[in-house]
Length: 160
Image (cartoon, rainbow, N blue to C red; front, side, top):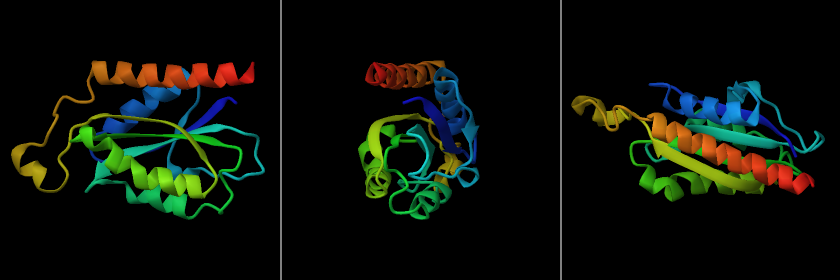
């Protein structure tokens, strides 16, 4: 299974877009907006990455709406990984769980998840200049590359 799409919604500071681009570079694919992508169970199996910043504890509404509007069997035969940037990535499990559940209901096999700190000025945080002003930094982006490398290794070992 060759990785073929990385879907990303990055709004305020480009945090998640930086992470998405590093992952896409390793997987040798492009980053696209969710609303530009279509998925069906009739397509050849592929790996899809879906990510955004976290807003009030959830993925961006565009990402959630995209998943909600997929046909019920759209994920059959496809693998997916999720990724995010947030002010408090320690809560990744809470942030990612609803999206992973929704993807599984659509038939996707969830194969991984990644999260790192991102400059967060959402809501009242802008009063204090936000959290994690210099993130994602190069260390965060190297971790994203390593995560993508693991996905690629996993995919290549499955093809053998």
